[in-house]
Structure formats: structure tokens, C-alpha cells
Image: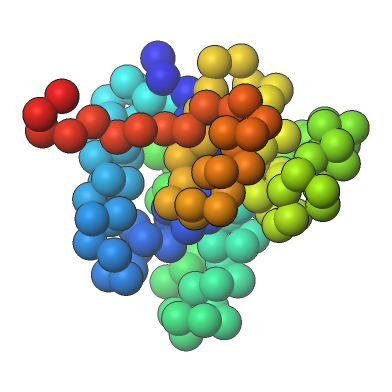
Amino acid sequence: MQKLVIDTNCLISYVTDRNLKQQGIVSSVLEQTAGLKICIYCHFNVISEFIFVLDSVYGVNPKDIRVMAREFLSMPGVELIFEINTKTLFNFWPEQIRDYGDAIIAATCRHIQGSAVLTFDRKFMASLKELGLRIFQPRTHTD
């Protein structure tokens, strides 16, 4: 089973129409997750960021945000992570990964053997590459 550590921007792209290509990629990943072909590891910080962004940036009703978060977290194949290896986190942040939330995701990926990060953030992708962490590459129709 493929293991993915999800970034907040993926969840935001899924529930908004800000980028239809990204929305389609996440939709496909979630479909595979529901079919237990992929396991998504979601750090609690990602859910906190998701709620904050939908509330403060997009103005979504908090009750609707709660429904979205509950439905995502109750999906088969989604595992909520609370733990963090602080030694790894502080080795990554702030010198190697400037964004603290991204450093949490990278540290989570480092400690879940065989995992890759699902993100659309190009700057974060570059940092992940430099750290030797895997980045999820969606398959195209020609693969």
C-alpha cells in the first residue's frame, strides 16, 4: 500500500475550485485511499491549518468546515497523526524548511518508512528533494 503524508494545500484544493487540475489529482488520491490502495497520513497540524484557512481566507461557515474535516478523517485509509519527532522537526526548521507547518509534514514523512509527501507547493518540493524525501508523483493517462 502506498503511504502519503498530505499537505494542507491539497485539502484546500480539493474542497475549493482554486485549481481544477489539483482538485482532480486529490480526488483521484482520495478515491484510491477509500479503496485502500493508498494510506494517507494527516498530521493534526494540517487539519488545524485547513480549518484556519477555510475560515479566515475563504469565509466558509465553521459548521461546514467541521463536516468536511470529520468526513475526511473518517475515510477508510486516512490516519490522523499527533506525534512528532521534535529532534527531526528542529533539524529541518527553520534553516532547511522555512515554513513550520511544512517542516512538520517533512518530519512526519521522515519517520513513516516508505512514505512520500503529497503537496502542490513547489518551494516545499525543492526542500523535500534536498532532504532526500520522496514526493508523490501522480500518474498521467499515458503512464
